[in-house]
Length: 415
Image (cartoon, rainbow, N blue to C red):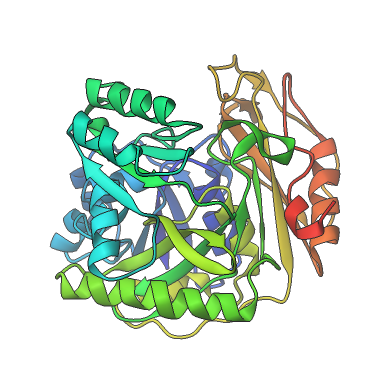
């Protein structure tokens, strides 16, 4: 099987690394890939969806997998399908679940799926009135995609009004033309993933991401500083509730609207008193959650994703293991860019591996390019062993200015 992977981050590297285990996979291509993916396959310098689809057709690509949300929300799947190509991911219309927070909230309300009380509006006076009906903390979101930066948790009503005003004035460009204001939910977050074929779905291990830059969830929000799975915070009863009360109604609602959902449905959950609420939908694997989910999937991943993309999804097996991933980020992340610096590797422990993200390659050497550079992943029979392996690997990776959190999976281990 020849497979094309769209994207350039740690998520795409993790998918490729897992696909290398499949005996039926002969060739991997990346568009554009990063400095380390070239060791797993071939990086392509193709820009437009048409160019990518034509490459897939001319080179008899059996399956294309889309990693990031941006090409999905812009319609890459529609272009590929118009040429009779098999591609794993939702259509442009279905990807609105992530592309528009206002659409997502309206979809939840229309399908009676539990979420925080909210208002979608472009009218500041209306927004102000709604803010004053909420408790002191308020969540303010720009409607469109903002690379993970369009969500503000205001500590009081004045902050919330200021945030909404700035968004409406254009601080997030067109993404903030409509603002979503929500009540603040006090609980803990989980990441729930389901592989879907339009009608059916299979659930993956429940993960927990660590968004804040610093230990104990302090500091600014980031793209994610680490993750682990499966989380003991999600017992069997909670998983069933999410499947029955959120995922199944989502697929039914999307199909009813004429936009059947095929691909990865990523539900960002807030658990309040044991009850799951939808914070957000994403329409692709999370990053860094993908890096800890891939080692837990058993069997032939390429066939699983191909079957989902062609509407023939069947059950999948999971490995009875735990995975912990620790992000090593550049010195100035997430505030500003950091100069390129060489990565020096020591010994890689057994049952641990690296997923490269923000890196380039020069003369056979890997360089940190800034941002989230790589993820150290440990896989073991329990969370503590997996975390120890991940941190042992972190200690053996050096690049100037490297930073990481030292408490990934602390909620599961209570330490």
